[in-house]
Length: 251
Image 1 (cartoon, one colour):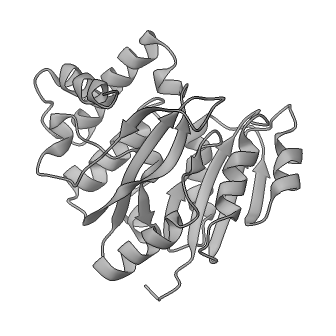
Image 2: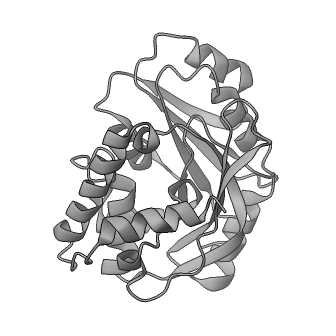
């Protein structure tokens, strides 16, 4: 990996005009220069594309066509990426500071790792200064996923070569493909990780998995399925362990 590796950030959008400017601006404002921002849009009917074009700076590619949901969009973007380091930023989310990508790249270069991740703030959708939940990931420990640990996906950066070798998002898991990917790379394949202890992303509350109790239950079921798909032992009382970890973040 050379000194100024290119970083590609993929964003999936669909009728995202309300918040997409925050996402695009936060990438444009990064003090790291070598960034490629790819936006995969699911044929939005609102002013998403117009808003992106009015705000764009590091956006190098916009693909707008119908897709099979967010993980299909992410996979499309990852396969188009030219960067050596790949990250994903959802259309409602934005980077917490202008030095996030610089710190991520330094962590990759100085520590020779496969994945880098950090912390995340859940914020009020309208008042993004108001932190509702603080996700402090902490370093990986043996069998961490079984004990309810996992990184916040928008803070998770991976070398492109890792995706090429171990595969992309499993689109069958419509609510837990990000969990399954991290489980596969970190717990199953034992890839080298590095934890940066600072809040990288502000994530607006109201994502697909947390929208309803039904989605939370379905998300948990899919997480259990992710263990089985990777031939990893499903932990006893996993759903309870996972939920208690999340509740701790509120206090």
